[in-house]
Length: 457
Image (cartoon, rainbow, N blue to C red):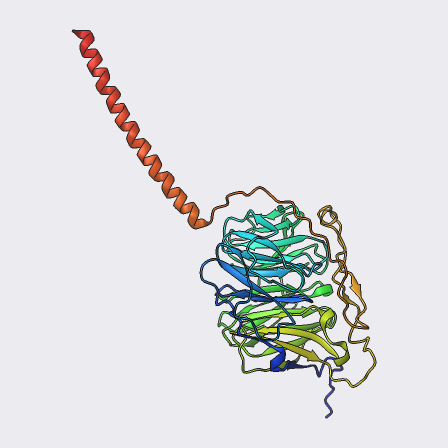
């Protein structure tokens, strides 16, 4: 009996690690237990959360700095506590956002060619969260719009030029928010929470449009959007601590589209989706492997393709923007894999032999230009990301998106510990003043008695 093999141009995709001399070594990556990817990338640099004593730091490394990284590498070191997440501005390669345990988000400007000295002064500081800020995600189509989530259970949307939280979704989560992601055109946000639920949020209305209990396990979960397919994919654990993924229709969260157990490893999944190829990648923390699937519209919706295997475990990972891949080698996706001390680029290629541009593998991809201004998006407009042809390779834009920050007056926002200390001081002051009042009342009573005694005589 013959077996019918499903036809797919991505069925034989394989991953290859770059040569050792093209990797990055001697990095001091953070050992934080926070569930972040720890590494991000744009066409010019990649950023890594850094291990530092006192305060919080991260590194922004040019791709040209291959091999052993300078041990005196200049860092971005302006936070008072550990940095938990970073994200590059999608329309300006020189801007990066960071969020920290110090309850703030900050916007930093990277000089041309990379940092020459440690950077301590941000272009903009975003104050408003009351507890540590865990995630930062720039809007995919609107310029200078940033979403952050915090352990104060709030999701805030910022106009980073004005330095203000223009939208805030409060009191909609009952526990720590693990992840927060924009959909394809930036009209909705999806969050996963420690209360085991995923939620779809309309940030401009400040409402939750739908929610569902995603994974029964006690370990952390995440959720991402599957690009223009407008589906959600969540990753987490079962009651028996097996790793699983679930596919959801955001318009009908009462049931899953599909659910699949993957394995029983202990590290949480990092999920990535490439909208141009419809490829989904699942990289487990502590694993050396990256599984990849093809996403289709018909059931069963996800087809397992293969697995990239490595003996080196990953602490974090990220996808490099599509416009940076090598089209002549049929490289459809590039990853950066963060180890304990290394960052290794991994090229995922389709095995084809041809000198001709493969337009079926490389449709027009995100161009790095914004579709809307911040005010247009806040006014209710939506637009899909702008695209450009990949034929001829990537060309750096002459003029990145403008960023003219309006400095806000520094407001003293206290951390939870600082607020407790301040409360203790105030309570001591209250106790002292109450004791002084008692003394005063006693003195008044004594003087009154003396006065009455004199009058009676």
